[in-house]
Amino acid sequence: MDFLNNELEMNRPIDIAEVVSKTNLSWTYVKKILEKLKQENYCGFHFEKLGNSWVAWKDREHVIKPIKDTCSRFLE
Image (cartoon, rainbow, N blue to C red; front, top):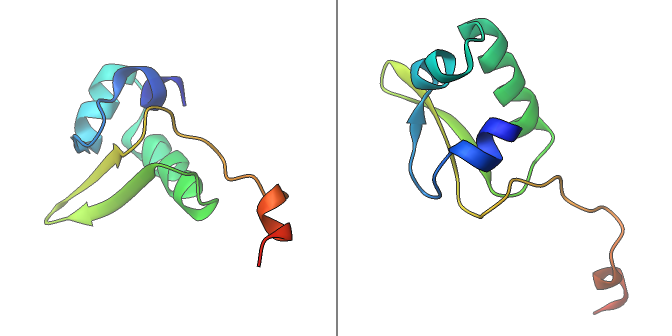
């Protein structure tokens, strides 16, 4: 999460191989973590297959987990 929030530029897709080289984590581990973030619907985070590679990007300053209980539930 620190890498996504602090190192990843907004609206700039990054190849998973680049994430691996910058974090020194294995490709399998990085992909597993990114798939989990996508599955849990983190706001501002995107991860998908593009050609023969996988890319991730964010579209807001910080990637956050969505809040389940907000005051919007009172609005019609």
